[in-house]
Image (cartoon, rainbow, N blue to C red):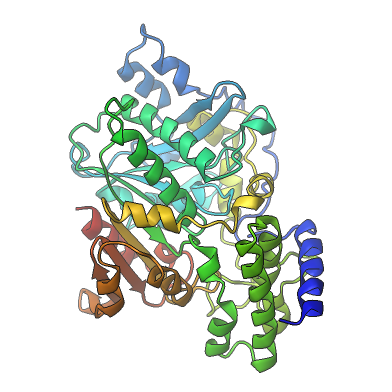
Length: 466
């Protein structure tokens, strides 16, 4: 590589990151809530669970989300303390399955970012309703909560309604993220009666491609102990368009070139940048690698990315759409309405944007969780699905990381034939399986696959977990 080009690119990337590079397209800053109706006080579930004089039934009653705007959908919300020293608390919103909740699988949904609220998944992708206005919800036809007990957690600490009283209470790496999520799940298993459930699944998308394996591996290690704190029957992981192994997923230039979005000159620029990022990763300089990654695709309002400069695109979640799409404006208004804040038991706590979490996890961004996935594949189902039209974490880059995994069945995976998957006679995608690994391509879908293909994704999640 030309050393001048390499050094110049690193300088540009570092400046760009400081200018605010961010997954900003769908995670904008939310304005402060408006004063008016008293939003009530936050509900801290942990001390109530630890109080022997209060029953679990009483705690559940306190956490119940009440309000006609919620369309008679049963749900529970509140805060779980995961670090008492810094008062680190994770916000959860739980929806029992509408059918057969007693035996239905338990699903934990985690948004990406890093630092995005899981309420995006709830309202935009797969929850029981979508936001029409600050006080009006509409039932979703293909909600995952129809047949699954689904928990949405604002993860990590600092995302959405989750918070800490001190910066030391925020996660710096995936181990921190996993430990906090594990503590939260232990409390939820104490609070809700899931003893007859068919099992626990961890799912999510995007940067959750790191959270999900991290939590699963932590849970696996803890429960290998002879006396685990609490038994959580993990069945598998379901990761959508996930960033899991950056060193093998930095192949944007080749992908964009094949799509016809860049030419040979653009391809060379991407190759230079990607080689520089890989070099940083191999030297364990993760800050350097993150700087380059952000400047490649993400960009900011003040400093466009290389991708934007070469293609004119500002939207990297679906290559059928070139410009930003604002589909969370109603969500932002909903969470800041005091009546809804009271119902969700968050009081006056801030609904945080993505920036602080992103900054504190910067050195984690380009690290790999592939070794964790390799170990997990020996014990659990690992499903990796991808929308066909994504740019930020596209299918060919995911395939490249999967081909480098070493696990029982890895050689079979490389030789396995894809099967056509149909839903009601229509081709929904393609499936490949070997050992415990399931790879699924979802046709005509971008980064947020349940948003683009809700029926097919509902069918997929139900088949996997049942």
